[in-house]
Length: 291
Image (tube, rainbow, N blue to C red; front, side):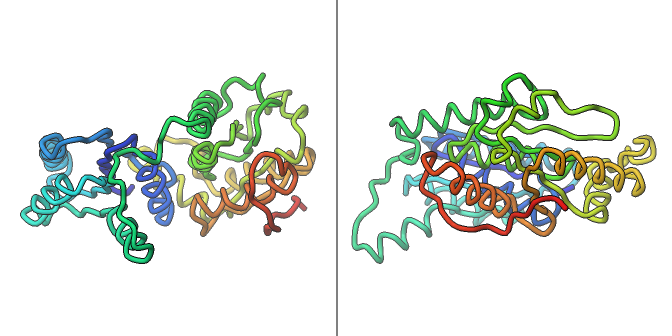
């Protein structure tokens, strides 16, 4: 399991969290542990947060080394933070906003507004995104199956194939997403058969990748976890899921060796062709029906 990712933001931290999850997925970790300090206005808030996290990390792991992603547009707070980081080499920090803003400023010749949280101005689009995120959280991991027909997108897949992080990414783009876990024991909710197939997406991966992810997720609990990471059971799990996907006529996307945003982009490309009024994305993806 990768270390905790600490996020500091002068807004709600959505952008940094999305990047953190995308980076973590490159190590087979689709649900990294994230500690968030949002709505930062002063360096004192940052310093207090970092010192607390350093102490906790040292106490828990025996090492003070930690990861920090930050998105802060206020120049003075950023300057003080960078000075602090220069004296703390054990903090591996990534500035996710300054270089991007500087590049646009240099090429455009314009000065940035330097308004914290400007991305989340409370316009109609912002409220739509918030509603989509709230809907998606309320319909994560099979919850509220009676609402499946009302979702923009429904994701199906076995445990640890990337349903939740993909759902959250899509929600941040304004899509109301439900995700439904599939396994060898439980029957899928009956409402799944009422969903338009063009809104159904099956996420699958290879047995090797899935076994590895499940074993690493279990850690020390592997010996008492039953068949969860057993290869034969994993293969049966995937085959049962594929069978349902064939029955439903949904599209399948392989998630192995893909970042969360790549999977989400494939889903959006297909969805926008089938439902062009939802947004502006167009194009052909490499989606395929389940054979």
